[in-house]
Image (cartoon, rainbow, N blue to C red; front, side, top):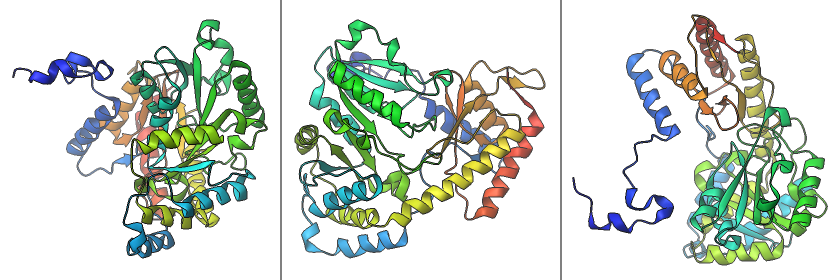
Length: 411
């Protein structure tokens, strides 16, 4: 089939004249294909899905009831743009109550339609051609993708086990530092599960002031913290002077599909984000914002969510340890990031985490997500569907039986 006339018109940022012609298969598409194969080859075997990266529960009943009530209010029918006072005030109160961070809801808080659009928009506030965004890997690539869209460059900071899954700022060359505009961090970190120490945040603030860059802390998993009390980057002295924090109700409140979060921090950065946002969307539906405000007012929701995923992670770590994996309880998130097996007792070898993951899916019907960005690791998520603890235990037992049966080996 011949190319359409507009094939020559695609922007270079998405592939230019070669857009749509690539043969490389995206990692998650490979996982989907492997899952389909496992279901076809073993139709009577339970698929144990540790690959799903989204909450398995619906939003709490009281939040859904609040949405139902708000839907019928005429004042919620229109565009919300950058303003829903109820949500901004609830977000500010949440930050004060849970982290001791005081914010002006009128100038230091604005909602976003989930944290992903916020991370996509913030580079528009700062990045010119040639500027640099520092991004940790493995990690969520959106801010880096949009940095490149604006002609900027991304400098990758590997999160290595030997560095306790913190970025090594000393590895950044002097010529890169002169171009850095943004540092994007994410703690508790997805997928490594590492939480941030007070000292790490202090280092980031000090470096931002020394090198003159803006900090964007992606706090999507902030409420899923197990080895310490949930914290905020903005609690750190001086943090409010150098950056913003991006929050989401997806993980801590079981509101994945609701697409609601907020950006908070330095007034001028929030204002810049709001200006870009005003030219990108017309605001989340007011009924969703108000129902989300009701969720933010109820701290018991995220406390229950944290308890549930901590329990599931403890079970997963115990099971994998019995199967020979070298893993320990993560500090936060609902992910377990652990070294991938290098082969099997029958002599089979895996060249990387992707090969190990494909074997687990196609041969054992156990789904994981591979990461080969900074070593060969598998990500197990405990967001699998299970109605109760008995169902959780049954899934663990099925996975353990299959893993022990094949004899995973580690170098």
